[in-house]
Length: 177
Image (cartoon, rainbow, N blue to C red; front, side, top):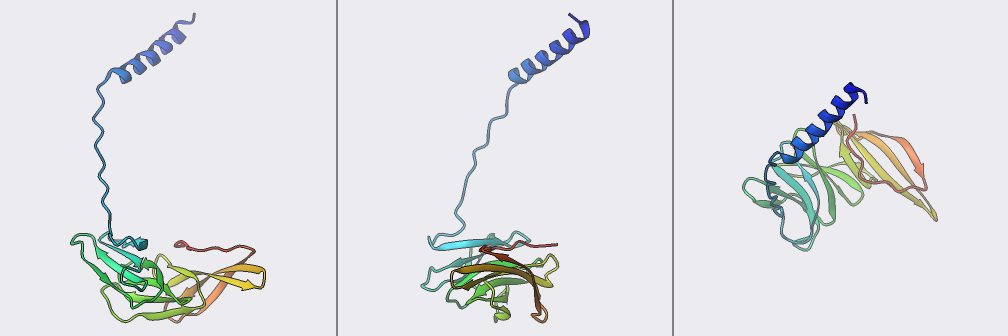
């Protein structure tokens, strides 16, 4: 047998035995905590600074967007509802985007009056700089269906369809660059 090959095999075997015999650190137990407690909370969105969670909830009889401050645990309704969904924080934490009655709205994350940004959408999300939205719109024409995906200006609502997907229903657009 080749002495170099014999030495290599010995080194590999020695390394494997050393790894097996060394004491292993104890595994830490993981504790999970529920963020909300109503049983009717969904679609969470964590703020970019990690301090707040926005979510949709029907806990008081109408689905609207709620905010939870993670440090204090306090929760408050942010939108009037009903049927508000798909909350998304703006990149600078200042706004929460959401969908109500097939329109995209934004509301200050500290509370205030919602402002409609775009009509005829099913879902939307922010651009990395917060100046645009990416959106999806599902279209039905009898048995035919399609989804349009596009972008819109936050400043003036002008939009353009980037692509139409025939016979596909798409949702939850991600941020784009």
